[in-house]
Length: 269
Image 1 (cartoon, one colour):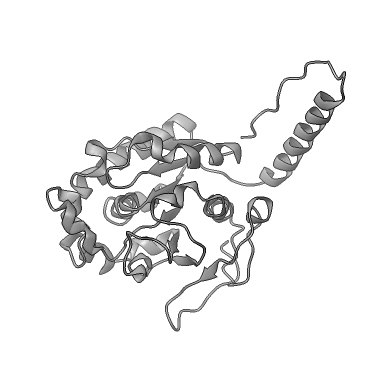
Image 2: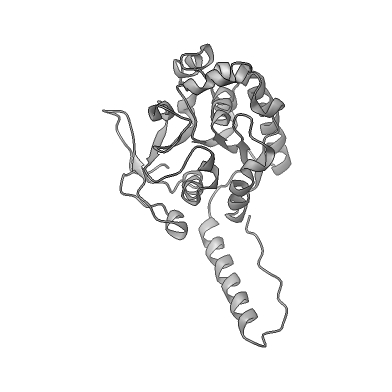
């Protein structure tokens, strides 16, 4: 879906409006060429622990500008309740979104705990059948010790390292391998400590060394550009690769992190 340009006024007294109209037409033409032939699926954004609804607004709006239909999952108790129940609610949201957009599958973007909720849905509730690709931003796949401050909540206890829920996910990653997943981790993330907790054993991992914290992940133009590339199958995982959409937005020095001995492919097709 390509968003429209500004409406023509027919007035070009100072040349500004004509220049703006031409620029809009060029942008629309560029987008039409970029989207041509791409099988795009709607995106469901899964927010993190206790995140208010407006926290993902910038990320959603940017993805919409890039031509995606984007919907934010409405999960119970601001994602502080039982992850399993939140994943079940996400399953309902996925089917609702597929019906709404007449889509065979959806893409998922999970921030922080939202990534764990998405993983449980994918691996344990059959979600792999309905998801094309998934991106996790600042998700503590192996748990975090700061979760002790959330012991009063079910989700807080489930985020502790070696919790029953995380062991269930990490010890049986078979379903995770049925779809392509990307985990984006920042070395400046003040919440996901140690940072290797963000490494996804059954997917692609991208570590960034520029200063962006945990909550800033969803405001990062570079991370959003990576999401677009990954969902479009244009994301090359070489260490020195600058993303197709990243070139249009912001340059940087993303660094690939992977487990020793794991063979890397050149393109995520």
